[in-house]
Length: 496
Image (tube, rainbow, N blue to C red):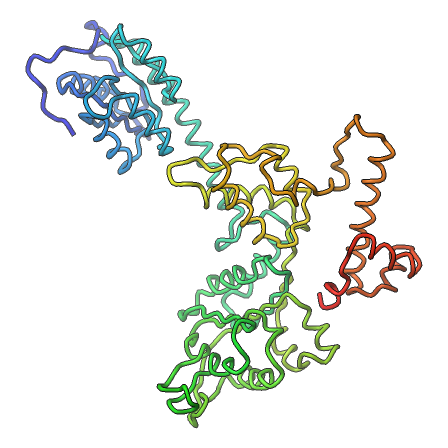
């Protein structure tokens, strides 16, 4: 910061005796909200004179930078409401400074100062994003009015940003973002069971965020100091699963060259998350049941019993109840796991979350130094119409791809991948295109509603064609023909 006053520096302020001692902004003596202003001026004397004038207002804190590069450093380290900058400076000049403020999305309003001959440059600065300009010598009355207006608008912008942050906080629960009533009911349930040792079974389609929910349950457990340890039961070969869960002693088998702790020991005092629990083979189901009942086990090749205090969270994308009926999952293990059951709704059943999640992922995957991508009204409508078979994970992947491949700041309909652009309109949001015959539009809407109805019926009846046909009011032959026509895989619902 520049503190010295250069001798003989030309005064930049045009004033009179009445203005010289009057503050720029009248502030109430009590509860003054201080706003920070940064002056960027390579003429030390001129900068100090302007600084002293602004400091007459008790509601302002004023700092001084000697050049654009120093100003950028100040803006990165501290928050400033207003930046008042000279245009012509050595090195990083005023125009380049404004470009950097815009590129880096620094939350500051820029006002430029210029001589009478530099009005064209000042107009160029406004086009780059500056709020307004002042001509030298600066008239105090104009400075007072301009600064007061800029501060009022800055306060409004800050309030909007604060409201957005509050909105995200309101719809966020341990890093899970949702404003769906069904999800909020789940959040409330997690709060109620957070400090207990209750086993929780999480069921939901692939990509709905089961692991994220497990982390939220662990985070809500304030009385558990241990870590959250996760294991994907599908990813571990059956021959290694027992060792992964319970550990082994040195020499227990050929490759056991040293003692190894299992996931149960690693999670002692914390939480063990068993992802894809439905894929545990039958022999391991019996061993897991014993450990869940006794909270005690032995390492492979060991004889010493190890007691653990572990909370169990299990997740699956299939219906364990259905698997019990089919005889592929132990009934006693199912009841041991199914103490509290949480069913995560798919994204298609909570469309109100799609805009919120899309904005969140756009901010997460924005390029460094660039604003997050926005979705046009038409593009967002496509997102809302799409069925999202991959759920939240698919939406996140899409937004990440759009964030790194789209050259425009606003993503339009034609930027979206083919599967979204070919999606049928959802019932109740049909686009009326008068260039198409009414009969053709009615056929399209009818086919869409019919397909969605049959899909929901199959999901409700666990893929049972006869019961689905009765629910739809069709005969079995008709529903079978419709399933073939729409290329529906009813086996996908047999274990849902």
